[in-house]
Picture 1 (spheres, rainbow, N blue to C red):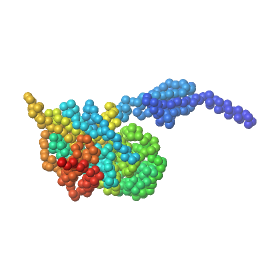
Picture 2 (picture 1 turned 180 degrees about the vertical axis):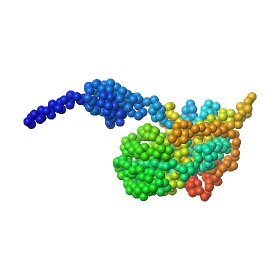
Picture 3 (picture 1 turned 45 degrees about the horizontal axis):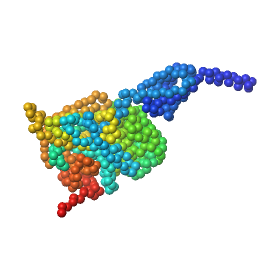
Length: 586
């Protein structure tokens, strides 16, 4: 009887085996890169499988021949008729649409113009993008230029951190436009019906009497605090071992708790952590239940590796699951940027976040730490994630970013914001955009595109051009020269709206003496000079620190703590970077 039972089982398994075939293979990109998580649809059985690590796959099918369809975001769908006994080598082509999204993105661009590069700079284990300064451009050949606008402020507080440590600043850590953003200077609220207001001013250049400075000022409307949309905030907190320092996780915990105290009942918070593991630490919780949220933040401790890639994916998934239509859906990443598990390069993170932002979720990056701080990675994430980036170096900065400027940093009024400017060759011989410098590798990529940034409620953004005026008499033969210096075209999109809006503004030749400018524009000039000197810009002459101090001090509001602190920073920099001694004549 026992033998009969074994015989029956053997026959049964034999019959099953006859009806099953094991299909194996691997799937790669057209650049020979293994692709994992490719969806593989088996047509006969109408079942779905996925490729694993290294792009390999293996599963059973019921027929010796079958049809399969391979799909993966960013690649062209591929269908094949196969013999199941053969090893399959599948190659998927990158889709044309996705390839354009993966191009390097520029901060500023002059059409058809080639720029030169600069040297590398290393500092401990911190990483910064190699930046290439914008150069002087001949207006007759290249009258058009464009640049992306955002509200990033990280560079200023990071520079402050170095100077307070009595240390020199890596030149690539100095981003002049972010240093001006930090102070939100020269703000004037737009008319009630408008999202933005443009203002321009023309004045003499304090460091070159042959040049002039053109100031462009873009002001964003302030959202009514009683009517701001409900928030769906996902705190993505790095609790890895590298965060075990009083200037890192404890500082972030204090900041996030301050933010929570200002939430409303209609807002909600989720917390995702990564450090050794990735997990949802707190499910979506109403702002009404503040004690639960505060307790969850307080219980965070540091330890483990830094699997940033998988954590970002999970945080976006949580944000999508709790998505509020017409609301403020935002992931707030708090980290030193030191990812060491999963995709860790700036390029890989660029591609990852480009996919994730399609969900309509914004991203804010809060950077902390020193020694291993990865500025380049956080800059990449904020840029690609429709977001902004701030560096928290002390408790005062935490209060500024997460409490005092809450709506400016976490409630956008527009995204994909960028400015096009066309100079009049009859009025401007050459020009140079100060700041808004591009990454070296983005310039090297001839397929790079200009990508706009996010602007938050009540922000004032300044851009300064150094221009050389022409002798207008050269251009007046037989014609009347227009008095416009340039034409501006501000382009932007409203959040959750795919249409592009435009504002056009003509820049008149209305010159004012530097000392007659508004104090805040003069202070912005002092900040610009401060940044250019720290950056050791080849376009900035050997101006003494005292000159920069004099311009800044005369314009600073001495009742403003941040402006007072800036004046003190100039004095600290003067001691760290002493002016070159002038040789005495015999």
